Image 1 (cartoon, one colour):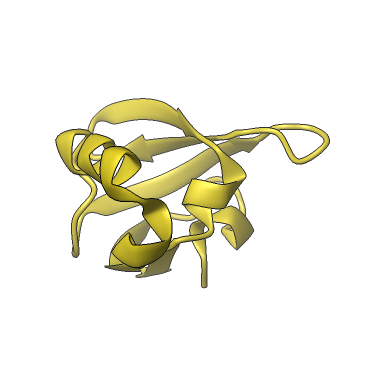
Image 2 (tube, rainbow, N blue to C red; image 1 turned 90 degrees about the vertical axis):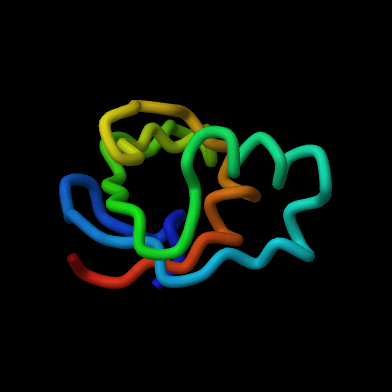
Length: 77
């Protein structure tokens, strides 16, 4: 399942990230924020009208554009 499809409050882990679709600059930012295979992630809130997704990565809460969230594949924790 992709992160943009993950229902709120379902603890998951990052299974894969499509780095080719993310781009170099945004990929670097995601890596700095701790996005990597096996990291705990949880969707907290989906913005209205295809807005950003608030998610918890490890102990941080961040907002991601849906396009970036669609490049992250998650699996149940």
